[in-house]
Length: 181
Picture (cartoon, helix red, strand yellow):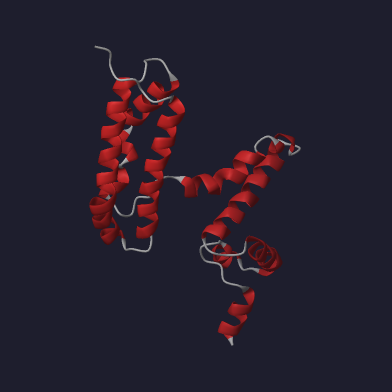
């Protein structure tokens, strides 16, 4: 007796995407929760979806031919299952690293252009400025307002208070003036 035939690779891929979409839908519903409650709800709502996905992948893997793209993708997924589902046990762990990918995208996109920064020193200076811009963003500041203010204040800033200009400590000069009054 011949084994049942596998669905075409496109149908397998569509089914995986559909299942992942449902998992991400649940994750979206939990994003407003505190870490401990998110973990509890992930266990209740998402863990069964992950278990169903794993079972489906294991069954589907028996049906797809070795050496094909679908087999390779399923093997890779199952081989990384622990890392893929690590977020289920810790509400503080994100389901993916998309937020980090978005933060490094400007550097990845500019990598080729920076080859023409002019010199190694110019490249180092560009890296410093870009680090300050991203740090300002991560601390909730408008990067250009931050840089304008810091560059304006830098010549008169006391050396022993230079750390006040770092993004995680920075407050606008106007707020500093009002606080001093």
